Image 1 (cartoon, helix red, strand yellow):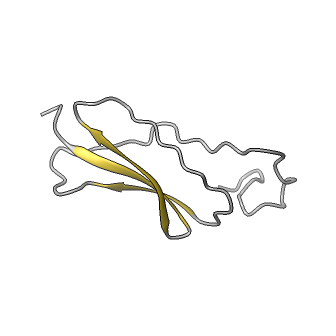
Image 2: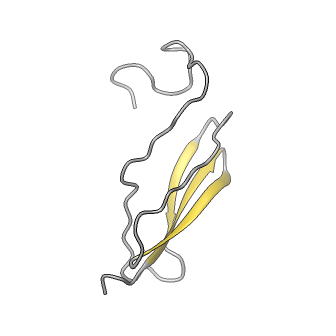
Image 3: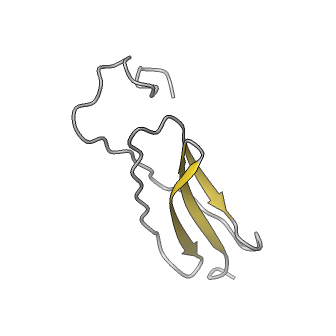
Length: 85
């Protein structure tokens, strides 16, 4: 049973799917990269597929990497100020 199950990890931005990756119980971690430039609303979703039997998933360590110079604190749409998430 430990090798059963299948899920699809999805990254959505402003209502559009930007990237997806399949993971199975018999496989290891999967990498997923998406270009989120200009995205206002970012969502991390899981799709159990045909059946949720034996499905379980964890995003483990999601990271957003910014290219270039970030905006000053308080000038972005992200909660980049202390105490906001």
